Length: 367
Image (cartoon, rainbow, N blue to C red; front, side, top):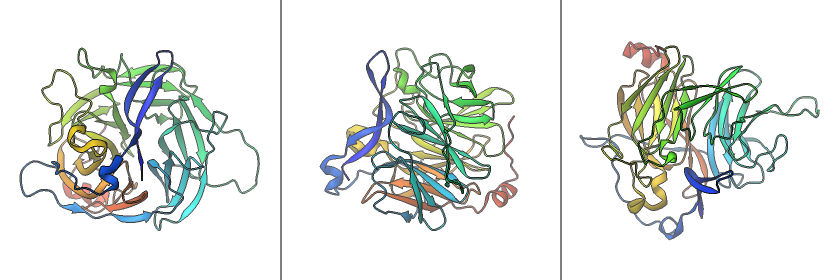
């Protein structure tokens, strides 16, 4: 394994290269030679959090450079930055490869830089794929149509030119997304790709580079609440759509706290997933000077409830790049690059979401 997605994007018109926290980086000899990785902090106090062991779901040669994933019903969909096909569909129960699809290019149904997935929960199974360089959302059915036919794929071009990092369909007529925004925390678009509104205030300090606001977005599966996990701090922002309020909560390990400008070589939450009763944030807590390219990966989970209370931490048995949770909240899927590219699975302690929510006496209220 010689490369890893760390992400850079060229802003059109300015020619400025901005580190988004996911471009290609050479991992160099430190990983290839399996040198020891420095210790990192996962949680404060005590004897350290319990470790979750990964089960390999799929490590086939079909995976070249997996970089993102999502769970859609009985399937795991994987974005691959280097294989002939952009997407791989796996059975999430046994890991069996189902199909690969998505050509590389700029035409209808093609992808230049697939960046994130937004699963569609209705049947038949499908997913919206966001192409960051093209600023385009494309609807992709996961299974072939029973009758072969040529159908122009549905797509939405987000038209205002902003660099956006994870569009999510709120309703059939509206899309919300984080991004490099100077006027808001989240932007809202209609189904034609026209910007129609915003949520929250910009999360940027004076003289702070705009990429410092980068965050991963996830949504409660059943309520109108969003969670933003900040890449360069250890903060979670809860956006309650009913009241249009934003609440910021801190994780157990400070990252970049008390600094006048955010250090882009210190990493907080590198990905986030949602279950009905939990926010699962993949935590790095590492600095590039000490960890090199591994700083952009995470080996720790911070669990919050949907009221913003930090509940517990778990250490993973290996570094992972991206995470996605099953809809029942019992399983967490992740991408691992070492020793070979693989999709792995962890069991989240605490049982299913209904039992856990009942035991805690909580619900995910949208405020």
